[in-house]
Length: 319
Image (tube, rainbow, N blue to C red):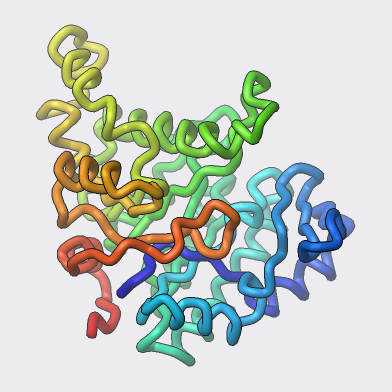
C-alpha cells in the first residue's frame, strides 16, 4: 500500500527552525500535559509536534504497522514560509529538499519525496525545483497561492513553465483559511482547508491552466475539496456564460479528470463518488499522517492512479 499524502520534518529542518527562531517567530509551547509540544510559526501556524513528525524510526514503524510499503513524504505546509523574506524561504527550501533527497536515497524502496520552493519568487522557485528534481525528488508541494496572487496569474509563469518542462508533480496543499467568519469551532480547518483547495482548483480549471501546462501533474489535497461535488454547477455555467467557457475547450467536468486527487476524505462513500466522477486512474491513496485529522490508515486502492501520476517522471518502485 502507498501513502501519497504524508508529512515529515527532518532533523536538519528542526535545527534550521531553532537557529532562525527569532526571525520566523518559531515557538515551542506545552499547551497540555497529555500532549506533545506545539510548534507555532509566525504567530499563527501551530500544530502538535508528535514524535512521528520528527523521529524517522517512529514514523516508519507507524507506516509499517498499517501496511504502508511506500510513502511520498512532503514538507509540512506550516513551513512553506511564504510570508517571510524570500531569501529565508529559499534557504529553508534548500535545507528541506536536501534532507528529503537524503531520506529517499537512504530508503529507496520505502520513501519518495516532494520538495518545497519559495513561491513568492517564481524564477528562484523554478531553479530550486530543477535542482530538487535533478537530485531525485518527484516534484513539489505548494500552497494555493499568495496574498494578491492566484496560481493562474502570470506572476507564476516562470515556475510553472519549468514544472511543465520537468513533468513535475505539483501537490497543492492549503493552509488554514483566514476568513474572519470561520474563527470558531475549528472551522478554519474543518471547512476552510477544503474551501481553499476548491477556490484554487476551480480557478486553475477555468483559466486554461491545464491546457497551457499539460505536463504538470496537479495533485489536489483532501479529495479536491468541494470541487468534485459542484462540477455540475460549473458545467451549467460553461453553457450559460462566456466568462466561464472562454478559456476552455471542453466542459469543466472533463478538465476535472486531468487533475489527480488523494483519498483524504474519511468516508468510503465520498471516495467512491470521487472515483466515479474523475476515474480511478486519477485517485491515489493518502492519509495526511501524522496530523490530527489524518485519514488513518490510508485507503487501499489499485495502482492505476499511482501509475498515471508517475507516468512521465522517474517511477518509484511499485512492488
